[in-house]
Length: 390
Image (tube, rainbow, N blue to C red):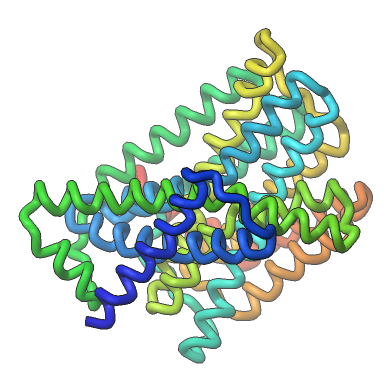
């Protein structure tokens, strides 16, 4: 009974904001931020439930892709807007890339360690054992290596967009081919949905995914605007707001879903979902930049990166590569999570070009050192062999 009560409370938490947005009711910014935050929590809880049920009919990897895509819809909306505006006003170009790189570094540098920290506080375990997430890690490695390539050549072209979309589609195809695992659920609502006949289960669960997506999109703008307005009141730098506070707000649904999964004991799935989010952000999200930019400009253009933007892109790829190296042995320890968070934190707190250059070099050198001395290349070979049957 408690599960059903909490389920309906989450439905109400999402519905109230959707009604407010439809009726265009204007409320105090602080009140609106609180209500939209409640809607994000409700949508995140519903999304995690729907993802569990989806595993009855879909492989977990593909269900994770759906979860990740819906959870980060607000981030797509924000970055597409900045990229489109950059085609009209060149001043927005730095915001488009700053928002994208900030979002990606938040996912890996802050959210990945947060899973380990929350898991430790909840269960007093100093490491997270990663299950079958080879697919996510392999394609995140491919996407990260391509991000290095983009940073070095200093542009994102429509050809890059086609290649990146192709990588994501191949990733999705491989996910659909993974074996299905019977979900083990303890939630009364999830059990009810799983026990339904297949047509009814798929219909109702699809509605839950759609409902969660509507809730997240409805909450994204007022929640993000509320946080940004708060930042302005506190006198925080505008570029800092775009690179960190706006992505943190737009990524908040993803964060809430991951915390819910971790507190329920699904820490490995949480890391897998974050890796999947990073894959689609380093492929689909990056691919939208030259497309939206060209539409805004009214002609086919490449999105050129200045020197600082190239450094930012390289740093983003380096942090992602370090994270992948740390978990290549399928174990993510508390000290590894702390080290990764510190690498992210220090480069975020000191956002100068020199710090980011030196930081990128140190982070990349550390990853290479771990690969060689720890023989983690064998772990990568095993992962690629498992995914592609080499």
